[in-house]
Structure formats: C-alpha cells, structure tokens
Length: 483
Image (cartoon, rainbow, N blue to C red; front, side, top):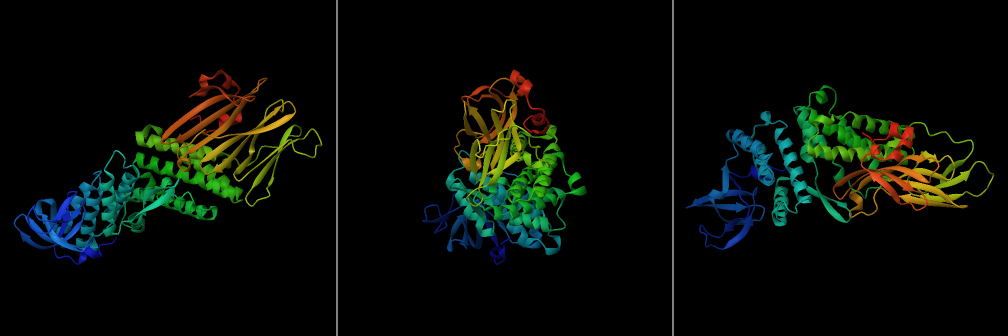
C-alpha cells in the first residue's frame, strides 16, 4: 500500500472529525484555508494554545487545526500495537472507513517488518470495499459530499476506488489490491482468505461492457480465486462463510457455463453447469442470514438461467412431429432457429427466428398435438428468455417471453423464465419465472394462454395452481425454481 508519504513524517496527526477547519492562525476567527475530513494525514510542525501547526501534504497547505480534532502518533515501533488496537475497532464501524484506512497506513509504517502479517491488509480491503458500497448506495446513508471526500481521502494511502460502467452509470468498486496481498501472504488465515476471495469476485463489479474474449478469462480467474480456499481451509471456516463462498462460486460457475457454451466448448460448459448446481445445492439454508438469503436468491437465478448447460446430452429428436434446426445466421455470432415438421417434406421452415443469444436446443419441448413448441434462449449469463412457437390456423407465430416486462436498470437485472409443462387438450403453457429487478426478487409460477399470451393464473408456489398437476417430470427434476 502507499505509505511512502507517512514515512517522511516525524509526528503524524490523523484527522478524526469530518469538516475540520484548517485555519490560517491558532484561533476560530482565523481565515479557513481548507476543509479536512476524517482520515486526512497531517505533518505536525508546532503547538500553539489549543491548536497544532500542521502541513497538509495532499493539499500542499500549512495551517492550524484544533488539537481535539486529531490524534497524534510518532510512527515508531512502540506505536504499532496501539495503532493496531484502534484499527481493529474501526474496521467494523460503518462510516469510519476513511479513518480506519488512515490508521492502517500508520500501522504499516510503524510495525517492524518481522511482525507484519495479513491483518492490516485484510482490514484495508474490508473497509475499502465497504466504502465503495456506501458510495454506490449513498442515498439515505450519508451526504454525497462526505462520501466523495472520503473516497478522495483514501486515495492518498493508495486505496483506489474505480468506476465500472453499468447502465450508463459508474458503479464504485474497490480495485482489490489489499485483498490480493492477503491471498499472497502465507500467514493469512482461512477467514481472511475467504474475505479476500469474496471481495475480489463481486458480480456487480464486473464490467458489463466486456467482450466474450475478455469475460471468459476474467470468470476463470474469479473461479480460481474462490477455489483457493479449499480443503481443510474451507472446512475450518464458519458455516456462514462457507455458505457465502458457495453462493459466489455458484454464480461464477454459472457464468462460466454460459461463456464456454457460447465459445463452442460444450464439455467445459457442462462441467461448469454441474459445478454451479453442486455449489448451490451445498448451501446450508438454515445458516443463511437475511442478507445471505438475498445472495442465495441471486445465486439461484444465475444458476437457473444457465441450468441447461448442466445437461450433457441433448433431448433426442422426434421421429415425427415438430423439430428444430439450429443453423448459423448471416451475421457473425448470429444463430437462426428453423421450425420444421418432420411429417412432411416441406422445403421451407414453418417459422424462423435469429438471435445473438445462446440457443439451448436440448430444451425444445413440443405439445402432444404439435401445435406449439417451447425453447430456451439465453441472451446474457444471467438472463434467459422463453421462445414460444405456436400455430393459429395455418399460420405459425414466434413470441419471446422475457423474464420481466420492463426494466429500470437492464444491466443489473437477473432473471429467467422457463417451460414447466403443457396442459393436455388446452392451449395452455405452464411457466416458472424468477427475477431480481431493481433490488426486488420475485418467483412465480404461471398458466399462460397461447392464443393471447396472457397470464391466466399465477402463484408463488406450483402447489397453489391446479394446472401444475400436468407439470413436466423432467422440468420438476432439473429446475432450481422449486427448492
């Protein structure tokens, strides 16, 4: 970390209060040179009355601050233990991240090299990550000016909060330098390594604008980071921490299943899809906190969106009836789906639609009268649509059912909608739908009319809908919507 600046100071004053005035003289009536914020580091050059004369290296200004608004340290080895004690207190205090990072930087300068371990880096990473989350959700939590000042202040210690673009807005995220140091240090404990792995692999800090060639190696690296906590180190963790690692792994491996399938590596996609399901199944739901339950729902949606990747063998083609032909489109990366009737020798397909998404051909399910067919198409790693081919008279139609009808923030939405069965003798389609949109998670089971594509009935559980007695057996066995 960047502690070079502190190394030149004989006596260090750490500002402990926001909006501390740096004045031209040692009195309240003196002109104000600058506004200081908690965590700012000042070089002490003198003492007059109730004020300290200081030099602010970051702003390159001299002035006076009230002695009661700062804390002093000489950055000597004897100061290391007191600094560490304060750091341990501040690391879990929301709103004190900038001050805690300042104490961590001072401790790193004071502690003898032979006593240095992973604890200060773990604390820096934890506080920097929390500060980035505060910046992302600052409305109602802190004044924007305060958060902005804290973000700027921690930069003097080498803590970088970077912006990842999502939906045209910048998502503040910690760059993870301290977490990387935790993973590199052999002295780090399993709990510290787990926190570092979780901090480095946040889903919301992945740039949504990455190309497939960039995203695949990133997800592979994220999986390696999470798997670094394994064996006895994993089993020794508290159950809650193991759950959090499993949930993150499930989401990352689900993304890898999608990326590998899109890249034409079906074997790797199948292995990744099965790993994602295994990680989700390994979660102990009894040990989930309220926040972890939200993470569990998100992980389940990610796994559900890519669950067809876990099926190694496609559904066998029908000898007669409706079939699909999946062919390359005219544009690079485009896939076209032709619906054909194997009972006739017609040269032209009954219907055709092209997409840049991933077509899961194994998901195709026709009804018994061969008047409709359902197909899963995944456009993003965490977003899967349902295509419905249906006949009205002699005319075939193709409709796309998205997981959610309207999105305020499309890039941050998660969801899938999937075929759950056909109702015999009726133009009815059973659907399962699970979404997380604008921070709200919703799971529903629906009965859809094919002639209008309107939801006729909906419930939070399939047991509440009589039509779900016709649910597809393979769907019930494979889905994560019923869990």
